[in-house]
Length: 317
Image (cartoon, rainbow, N blue to C red; front, side):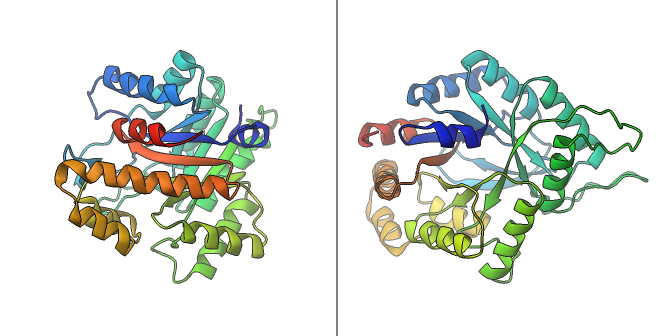
């Protein structure tokens, strides 16, 4: 089922999750153990991230987030299909611009279509510190709106090779990113909304936001989107803060603000209680969002289900 259909048919609010594939050469067993924990909370879909270049964000055992230049995490497609078949849960593989030619992107989408995947999230991708050279005679999608256009073209039966006049249309539900505190490359929010509008014009069906720790950012963002004529569903994205290192790593790596109240609570807490502070803060965020009729919330969890399990013990959904 498509993400938009899940939103339309939901009788009660739901929470979805985003996970990251194992490192190259890693085992899928631990990842399945993570999903075993997540399915207890009945997510209608799970996002699976992708990494094109040599730059990766990793969560350290003590809760920090670090950026490394190393070989990528393969397996997004295989993992998405494995989860869908093993758990009967829809998956949303991330499709990236940078690091892949248009031909490679088309091949990946054809494979996903063959395998019954109905949803994709089209994102620009992070290649800071590394720029994969484009082979001679090939082109890439530099920005997400270009990638959305390519996916939408395939949904309409238009492939890269002009002689494929009888190509079978794909049927992807296309998600894109939204930025309540604006994308770091945008000069201002108005310009950032124009970028989102371009993605929608090219075929995007819904948006999921960058993480935020003050709901006011999300509500203001949605209001500005609606005033700008953006009508697609906008799913709020959250991440549970679990370490003092998050106070610096999250703003540095994701260009977001940590509210003073949350900062003070974390700084006053003993290390063993910081996760409890983060879970309590997230629970208040979720409750306020749901009280204002937000139909779903999306959690960025990477590879650790413990904070989410703690959160669900507090939530009344």
